[in-house]
Each structure stands twice: as structure tokens, then as C-alpha cells.
Length: 254
Ligand SMILES: Nc1ncnc2c1ncn2[C@@H]1O[C@H](COP(=O)(O)OP(=O)(O)OP(=O)(O)O)[C@@H](O)[C@H]1O
Image (cartoon, rainbow, N blue to C red; front, side, top):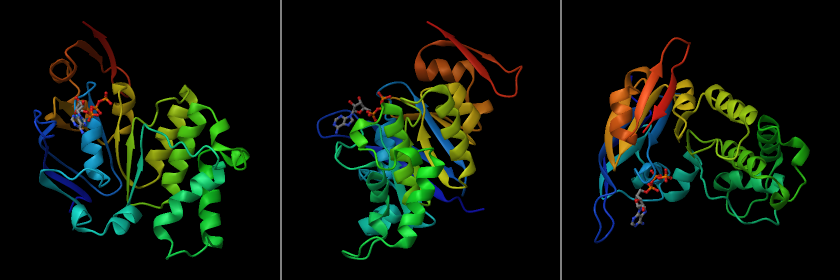
């Protein structure tokens, strides 16, 4: 089966600095979830930026459904890839429905007003993220976790093929963490996300990629990738992996 997303040889070096990413490659089949894990500064957000067409790699390629992402017009790429980032927007004057409605922008023709179909899609995204009661609230009055759910709803309203999320469970309480991850699983979309919590990553991801100083340490099914050896190489900690339950549990020490 042809993978839906292919990243090949991704490399990026800022001017006058050492490489941030070196020859990173992976594939993600249609509808699967890839989790990227690594220490602070490992290059995870930099790698995501190449997938949502924000940072052009110095070398390497990203293809989605066989199309080179960097050869597509920006607007076409924006219809196909949605990103939920750690930095949240500051347009606090918009209400939640308007904020989610921004996800429809790449689908509009010229200055056309949003139509009934847009309104339906926005309402469905609000409902999915348990935000309907906040629809008329100003974005700026929401809690950090509620804002995070708005950003995910906005990405869903975009109806992308590929959803990229940078630490999507940040700010979320335990219930909403589990709900968001369950929702991502149920979407049927190709998803790439970064997560610091290895237990959550092992639970949600079909495949997991470990990055250390911009280089790939391991890539594959979580049970194969997350070993004491690879965790030590990635995070410089000793790890114990308890595999007695349905999903692995980790304990760490220095
Ligand atoms: N434009 C830039 N110019 C120079 N260095 C950069 C630039 N962007 C990122 N870096 C550096 O690249 C490294 C990787 O950054 P990145 O944000 O990708 O890490 P990360 O793995 O997402 O980290 P975290 O877990 O802390 O979010 C960091 O050391 C960062 O300082």
C-alpha cells in the first residue's frame, strides 16, 4: 500500500549554526497516527513545520497522497493540511464560533461569505470538541484547555487530509486528554503529533518516532520503539518498562 504521507531525507540547518534536523524520513499510511517524541530541543516542532508547509527543508521531500507538498500552491496545501500549534492566536476579540470558522478560510472562493455548509461543519466541530456551550463566548475569556480544544475544532473545520498537532494535550485535564486522543483515533485522518508523555504516545500512536538532536533514533510500532535502550539514547534517563498491562507503563530515573 502506498503511504499517504512520506517524509524523506528532511534536513535543515539555520545559517551559521549546526544542523537542527539531519536526514529524517518516515512514512504514515492513510488514517494512521504517528507520534514524534524526543527531549526539549530535539527538533520535533521543526520537523512538524515542514509537514504543514511552514518551513522549507534544505534537503528532502514531503509528499501527501503522492503530491510534493512544497510544489503545491500554498492555498491548496492549506486545504489539505491543518496544524494545531503550541502558540495560540491572540485574536481574543473573536468569539469561539468565529475562531473555529477560520478553519473554513482555505475552502472559500475569493471573498464569498460563508454558507450553510460552512455553518454545519463549524457546528459539528464545536460539538465534537464539547464546545457548543462556548460558541458565543469571546476566545480570550476561555481557559487554556478550552482554547486548546477550540484550536483543534478549528483544525477539524478545515476538513484536512493530514492533521499535525504539536503537544495537543498540553493544558488539558486528564479527562480531556483522553477524550482528545480518543477523538483523534476516531477521525480516520492521517495524524502526526508530538507528545512528551510516552505512555499516552504508546497508547494512541500506530507508529512512534524518537528524535535525538535532530536525528532519528528509532521508528516503528511503539512496543518495538520504546525500550530502555532507545529511551536512554533519546532522553538520557534510565527507564523501566512494565509490559504487564494492555499498554506499556514507564518509570524513569536519572
Ligand atoms: N530559526 C531557528 N534558528 C536557529 N535555531 C533554531 C531555529 N528554530 C529552532 N531552532 C533550534 O532548533 C532546536 C530544535 O527546536 P524545536 O523547537 O524543533 O525543538 P522541540 O523538539 O520541538 O523542543 P521542545 O520539546 O522544547 O518543544 C532548538 O535548539 C532551537 O533552539
